[in-house]
Length: 443
Image 1 (cartoon, one colour):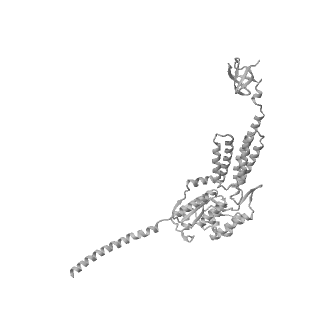
Image 2 (cartoon, helix red, strand yellow):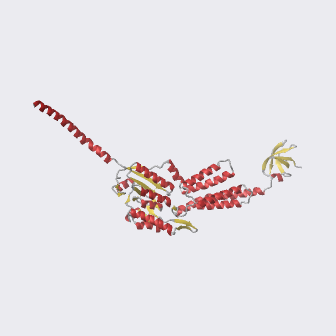
């Protein structure tokens, strides 16, 4: 019994030691293991929308949402600093925000930024609306260019559609529906503090780190945001999106179309210089930049104008075809400017600048074209050399024996004479063989 008792005691001592070691291990390391995932900071992705809202903006937001979802980010922040843009593109962005399960924060930023018209609609559609101090939203009424300048769009079909969209987005997110309507029908503008007071936005945050603290614990899309101290990840568009963003600027896209058109005309009339290739490439880039949503009538007029000018340059006309072609190109350039409110939802001054930018090259080319027509007409009125050279007088520039050079009608010609003629002597033109004048000493 004593031996058994000793053995049992020894076994019990080892068990106590092992148990103590395991307990100590768990006591020290288990909290660290359990705390590690809990203390791991999440991420928040930030994507910037600057300048006009274009077809490239849709792709940028779409890719940013996909990347944020793949990386498991808590939210996506869209910073807004825009004068407006395409209504079609704006609606697509609002749909992307609505379809994703990822919380999307609209943030008018930095201080001094504006989010007018299309930008206001995007902000109203965001799951969380935030503005930085010193920023402005509003001026969402569509306008168009008229004979007397800029005019507000009073077409109830357009106005009611945009108002309904803004009101519905505000209602879904429990925001001020009346203000959403006034942004459009009365061009209401609000700064950050007033927008917060009126219930248009949820927060006013000075910068992104402050924003992350402000929205921490905010519940959207059936989830509670945990953004305090989250890692800020900046979305970097791939090269394709960067190129598309550059090309889709309305001013640049329109200029590319015009440059391509004129380069194609020049290349067809003067083949071999490579202008045709430049024209085709720039035309294609312009169409890509416009997202192929180009007025068909405008393209038809531009094409017709190109054909008429090409025919004029290759036919002995009187400039009528060329003038008609120029008119077609000018008209097509005007129609290419997206001044219709259903397609382009941007301020009037931006549209006016686009119109001037499109029209400027047309008038420059018109001036060149008029000058070219004048020179062509002058050349056509001038008699052929073969009809006037015989009997005319020229001056020997150097000694002609039997060949030399003469000054004839202000031009240097190679001359040939059967007799020796000294420099400075006057000679009479008796004929022409190819580019060589036949001369004799003037009596």
